[in-house]
Image (cartoon, rainbow, N blue to C red; front, side, top):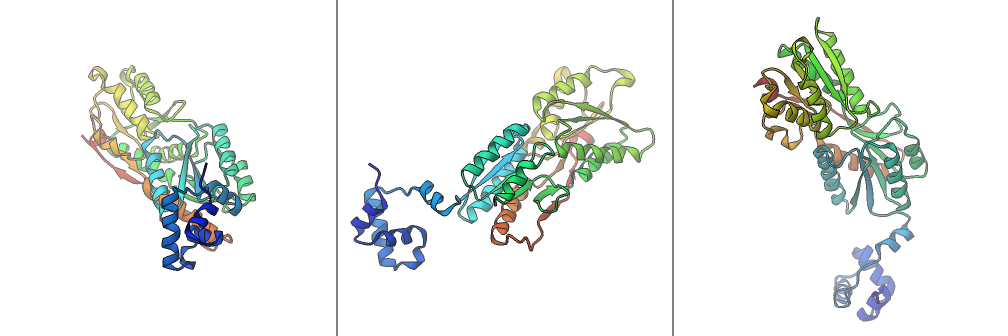
Length: 335
């Protein structure tokens, strides 16, 4: 049978209220009393019922985080940053993935609301933010991660992806490339659309340069390899001389396809650049050029914004944090 707070109180010869203060507000209790209660807890093997405490308080000490793809090292690093900041405030992060599907995102958001989380961090899988509006109306703070929207009511931590797309393609153009393919994921993902906009701006500045879109269903290595196989089979004037992939996972897949039997030399025949600068971008068979985002800092600042929102619901602070991307040139474009 589970040991109760009352059992601890009897063993320590104190009131139930004193045990509660030791658990929740130890500064209110004398050091000797704290020691007596802690010894009774250890002797009895008491484990607090945090779920019941949360129910009484109306909030848990958890923060919900929904990302597009936890298999993407970029989002794994975002989660680490979020956990680091949450831990500083004695909170935990509940991590889930939408797999780039709005319906899965909605299910996770509903579950987090049922669990009475202190707030939600989310990278939206689409442009419909109705559920997020509902959460905010219910008093659940929401911070957008790696995404910015026009609605200033939403707190957000983002990167200028238009500038990032521009930097990637301007770099390819500066290397003398003119026939560029953009391997992209679903157009419903705002980050992809913004990177495409930046790429188009760069191409528009160079006469004779072209940009071809190569759509794929998801931002994964598998789909990048499929796109690479398609591009690899082209010959002559139909072959592109550069590829900009919407993220590093796609770029790794393209590189794998190009490297099969050594049929396409990177960067000799086709230059290749990705986006995110995940850890193993520098460790591929041909180190990948990429556009760097500060993943850990994005997660850290997102939780920081959420906590500030809890302390200051009126929002008398900068609710939108925007980082600038950085070009990291490696062998896949300059080798």
